[in-house]
Image (cartoon, rainbow, N blue to C red; front, side, top):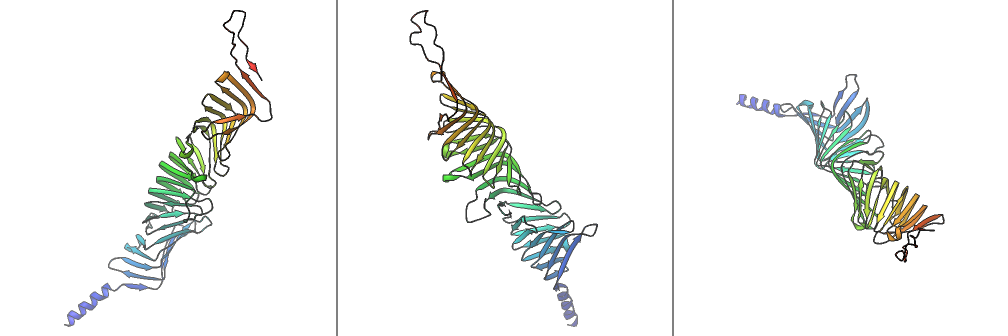
Length: 374
């Protein structure tokens, strides 16, 4: 009986965990500066499992000895004496600067030796104006890089994140890599995105890939890029095209072409402004519509008012009477079917017409009528 009681006490003693009121785990670099730190007000250590259960852990990441991110969770498991740390029941990592960067997930696994944090369960990354969701993500503390994969959705609000309202811009990608320190972002495709426009219009953009910067709030979509808006039958192709998603602007310095209902346009350089409700072809503008063609240095169209403006060496040719009109500036108005009717401003305009001679077959003495100029 004594032997039996003694054996039971020893067994129970082995199974009893060590309880600590305060716990601090820290890893330093070779020069003695902290790399990461984990603190907890309460923990239990099971020596036989090499497992520590931590309550209310607070983790800190450092760069060059300065704290950069803070990590909190309701509970954590320190496995194999610190080789792996699992944070559970809801994880939040916050940047300790004014960037507004926040990472959230249901669970996170920290591998100290590799300085890698694996986020699982609805991982979300956000700053002041953008939010990225994905199936899974990995954060590298060594180079401040967040990698997101599987059904990546990037959303942007112009006036700050507001989950009660739809974002102005939404982009879908299978893979995104984001440097939270510099803001540099790479998105692999195929990419698709849409932008809200006035009057309930939706502007759709597709591209094979993109790169950008979240701090400067732009994305460069690599060619071939396609922009479509079904309500007005807008179809624009070109690239690369830069999307300033904070102000709803698209711009490019490369060749571009597109259609608006019955109107075809092409040129070099593009600027689409949601705020100004305008499209501008910057150089070598060419507008083609049934029986009529216009060339100019630049063209401007306001889709709210329908106003069209062509500037610089403007030439309009029409099939009827071989009409040719030249001017430095021509103004026009877009009709509902997409055609543009041009009228000159108060500046010099030259028009040439080829009139048919009614008696041109009556005899050899009647020569061909010369063009009539105005």
